[in-house]
Amino acid sequence: MKEKIDEFVNKIPEAFINIISIISGMVTIITPIVGYFKIKRNIRAGKVDNISFQLIIVLLIIFVSVLILMFMRIRKYRKLMMISRSNISEGIYQFLHDFRNLYFGITKTHKDKQDSISTLTREVREYMRHSLDGLCAILNSFTRKKICACIKLIETEDGKLILEDKESVEDNKKQKKGIDIEKATVRTFVRSTNSDLKRGGGDKSKVGPKLRENTAFMEIIDSDGDNTESYFYKGNLLKYEKELSKTGRIYKNSTVNWKQYYKSTIIVPIRIAHEHLYHTKENEYYDIIGFLCIDSLSTQAFLKNQERYNCLLVKAFAAEMYVVLSKYRYYLRQIDGREESNGKNN
Image (cartoon, rainbow, N blue to C red):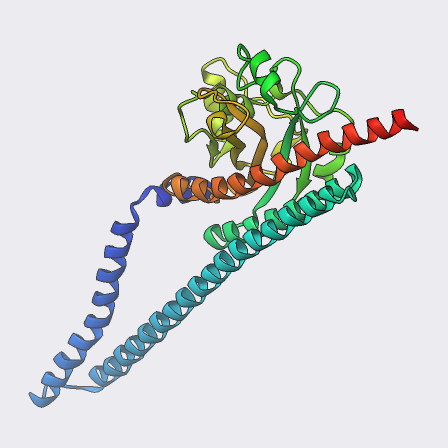
C-alpha cells in the first residue's frame, strides 16, 4: 500500500507540488495574523473576553511554530543541497583525477615492460572500485537511497576478454555488435564496496553466465545501431517482470536470487562507435566491452521523471571507463604475446 501511495505521489508534477506548498505556507502564516487583528479590533470595541485572550495566545504560538518549522525546513533543504553538491563535485573530480593518473601510470609501466597480467588487473580493478563508490555516493545524494554498482565484462566462451581488432570486426559483421551471442558470456569484474558480500559468490568463477540469459543486456545489444540512448532503466523490476509476463515473455536475470539484492536498476553499455576507432570505419557497430550496472533495493530510487538525468550521469562514467578498459584489454593482449614469446625463447 505504501509503495502505491509513493508511486502516486511521485507522478504529481514537482511544479504543482511547489505551488501548493507556497500557497499552503502563505495561508498558514496569514491566518493567525488576520485572526490577531480581528481580535484586536474586538478588544477596542469592547467585545473581548477571556476566551479571546486565550485565542490570541494560541494563534501567536501557532504563528511562531510555523515560522520555526519553515526555518528548519529551509535549513535542512540547504544542508542537503550542500551535501549533494559536495558529493557530486568531489566524486567527479576524484574520478577524473584517478583516471588521469591510472592511464599514464599503466602506460609508463607497460612501456618499461614492468607490468604483468596480475598487477595490471589489480590496478585497473582498484580504480574501477573507487569509481563505482564515487558514482554510488553521487546517486545516493540524488535519491537518498542505498545504491550499489558493478562492472560486467563480455567474455568469450572460454572465459577470456573479447579482444576487438580489425579482423574480428570483419569476421563478425553478421553478428550483433561484433559479439557472438551464442558463445559470449558476462562476468563481474568489480563491485562497489557497499555491495552485499553474498552477491560476489560467483564472481571468481572461470566462466560467467551466458550473455543471452540476461534480458537487460540483450535489450541493449539488440538496440538499433543508430540509437545513442540505448540503456536499460527500470524503477521497479518486479512490476516490469509482471508486465513482461503478460506479453508471453520471460524476464531473465543471471544473478541468482536477484530480488534479495535489488528491485530497480540502471544499466548502460561501456562502448564506443567503431567510426571513432583508428583500426576500423564500421559505422553501424559498437565496440562493447561490457556494462556498467547500478541498482537499489528501493523502487523509489530511480523515478521515471528523473530518467534522463540519472542515465546521463551513469553514461558519463561509462564513457571514461571505456578508455581504461580498452587500454586494459589491449595491454592484456600485449602481455600475453610477450610472455608467450619469452616462453618460446626459454
